[in-house]
Length: 499
Image (tube, rainbow, N blue to C red; front, side, top):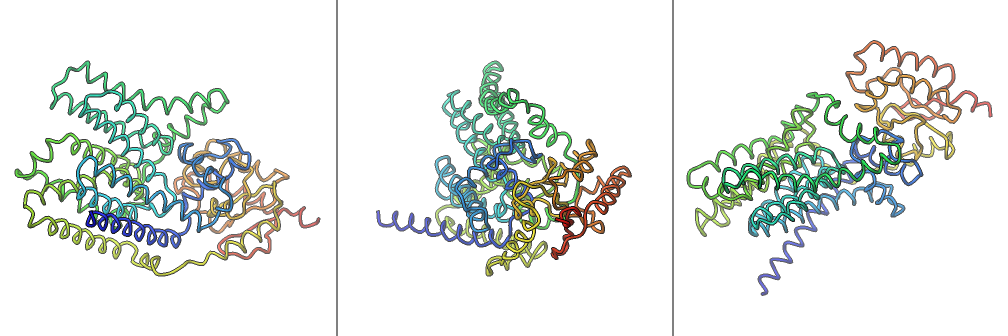
């Protein structure tokens, strides 16, 4: 009894230490570019702006989640946002440990949690990204669906579909978990369990019904409130069909995640050994986890940002832990500590190489405390020219400035990257019309540095002409302010200077 208590206390202490170190790492990492867009739009909901006033880059659930957190009050700062991010990270560890322990054993749960934690650090969960929440809902879906397959209870399939659908409300790519579930159900029920096609189709439809409920509810709401097209476009059509494929993050992916792209193929090849293959691949849980992991690597063909890897990498980490555990059991009690310890030391070694190749200075985030006091100065400088309720227009690091200044644009973009380029190409008049708005007090625009918009946008002549026209009108109606904060150049309306 005492030994069990000591082990439990040790696990809790390790969990708290890991969470604390992660909090420090997160705080020193700053807000992150994507996160600022979630924060700005989330806060706009509390300030009375209807959803889709500003173009979102993710599904609506993420923004309402942020708004709920900001509703607590006095949390719009690095300390509180870092705490929120740490809570999401810590939740991924807890859900992994308890669900994997119920499906496998303590050793698999511990190794899985450790590997999932490493994934979180290397795959940008130190920023406010939806992937951690997507993974949690996917893990809950796995738990319900795998239990339903084992016990032949269709209710679990439906609940599993609901959990995956809940993940889609944070990011549409959670639908890959549904695709993986559908593939697994067909493979296992047809090739292994030899069930009838009609029974398999029934099970597939039950999962899909669970998924559909969480998708149809917001569609119905926006259909009644007049925002159906915006909901469909920004939740499904743009992410799946319009978001451009590129290799911008290719180098970052395969240096920062070198350890992962060594670990997974090595483990997979090792699992095919004759003395392991039958034990591992005779279990539906193992096959399901592997399919969930590999299917979620498909988005890498579109873009290679490290956080895209996380929802699949977390499941492949669990699969890796299963293989390590099976090899340990095969070797016997004498190797119960040696094999996991050796495997984890090897992983840590390769992680160190990844850090060295990609960003060795990141280690400073673990023994320092960043100073963000300049944000207070920048906020006061902007608000001096922009009263509450008036509008601003920012170009460079736009979400950051909107968040810091607590002011909003007078057109539907807080994020001028991919979505912004798409909107401006379709509606170029938005940009010029914004300059004519009498409520517009301040513009941030540096004509010498116009690389803030998606690079493909600037390759088209009509778009460069648009920016040139914008610059000319800006010079006529606005004048450079006395806010000295490079690389930003702030312009104030000429008529405001005369007041």
